Amino acid sequence: QIKAQLMVRGAENEELARDHSPLIESSLLSTFASATVDQLRSPTGRVELRDRASEDIKAVLNAAVGKPVIEKVLFTDFVIQ
Image (tube, rainbow, N blue to C red; front, side, top):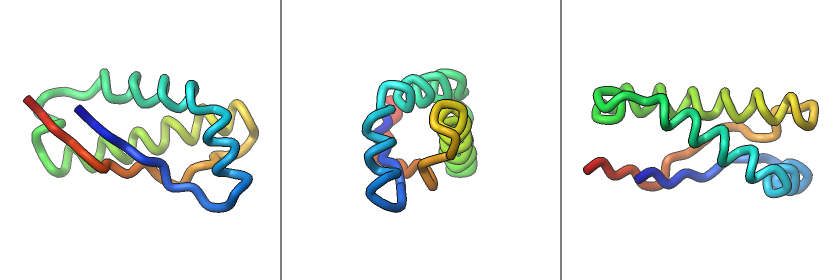
């Protein structure tokens, strides 16, 4: 289980992120689905996953609205069973 929040700057970017939340969720699911168990268990792997998620979201939002909109993804809860 992974809970994440997005860091955005400014009301305009916040609104764009809200408007495109299905696109963001889809991008996150794709990124998380490609992660390996070893990656999820190591602190370095989780940092790499977070950074990849940030870059993936920036790329899809850049294609959709012409700018990256978010600054980064922040994990607020990370549970592996």
